[in-house]
Image 1 (tube, rainbow, N blue to C red):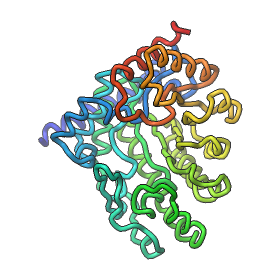
Image 2: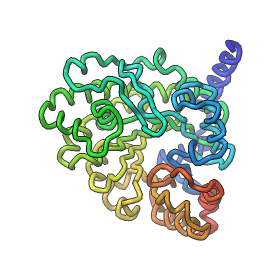
Image 3: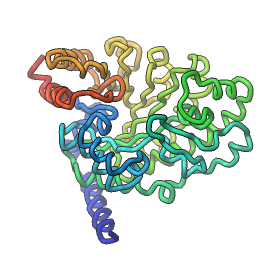
Image 4: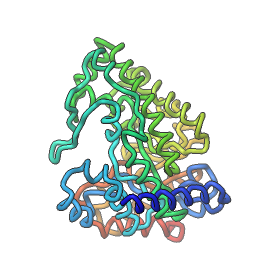
Length: 370
């Protein structure tokens, strides 16, 4: 096992070194698009592209029954991350993981229970609880993340961009304070409106660890990182400016200080009412959910900011003709600035794999179809 790990690390180090010295023209398509370079076609990938809709993943789950085993075992995480790569060859290969993965390294135990989702063993509700939160040391707490990213870089080379991802502080705090998933987020909002100093102390600690984790992923091989503030849209615009935006700004600014060439993609589900405020965090790419017309997003966001998205995931349940029409429409609306084709949300459970294959086929040949 030791020799396998040594060979994997050596191969990944060699790939990163070669990529760092390679001319820009050889960089993966998605990376060139994210940098704002002229590209031959818009790149394409899907959020949640590795996972439950694929039969090969379902078969693997029969043997490896827990999400944490699948995501925290290097070989399994790499295998799962590569399943859609082998099937569809997307332009981005995203690590199979979860935004909550680093929490254990921050002294916040959690589990992901089948049929229930994330469960935080000891929800944080007081300032004393916040004081127990530690700063993440990823090399010690989540070394499998770095090892998996390095292996992915070695596997795909420059044929696709390797993507990492992290959770934004407010979204992480939502799980941590609520104790898991929530419909109304009453516990974290009660904290925000009665003890804001407690919530800000937690958010600040989370931001520091997210900065560290983002840098760690980039150093391990991630060529771009998506920042998920999935539940920010449950805040009013005014509250977003208080409890989310300052921490998004801090993360992006501080990561850019050490990794200025790392593209950062920002995504929040249902974020139509927040786009202009989200843009103040200055991500390189804004991932647009399906509730916003891409043409409207163009007018609402700075011209220098690239776009990602935003086909309705449910369109993949339609006919092949409908999928083709939607992909072409997405490409046409995204034309004229940096654009990465994607869904407006993660691919849905039960999506036919042949329809996913058609989505990628159309996207890769979209120039000839328009």
